[in-house]
Length: 141
Image (tube, rainbow, N blue to C red; front, side, top):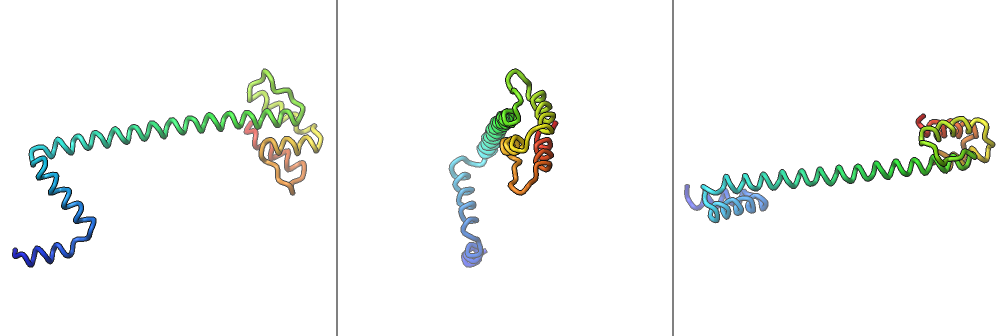
């Protein structure tokens, strides 16, 4: 293979490929062929630790978001209970939802609208019957 052939091959290689080739040559010159398996083994371990750390952070974020959603749902249920005149203190969320489902049928139109707004299911064009259905559906009882 002549120098001209090598130069033609080199001209066909893209920029990023040059960088990879230079890194490989530098690694070979710095560490030698005997140390390369150990080097890549260490790199693999570091990459695995990074992935485990990332998964742990994702898991913690997911748990925090779930807690926030749970608290937000409880606050919405308590606001809806207040709008319907149902006492919320000392009751579990399930008991409160059942009491809201019972109270929504006998509530006035204004109370139903307030409860629908508290549950984030209010739409301005909906009639009271539709709002009652939406409230009960949002309760997931």
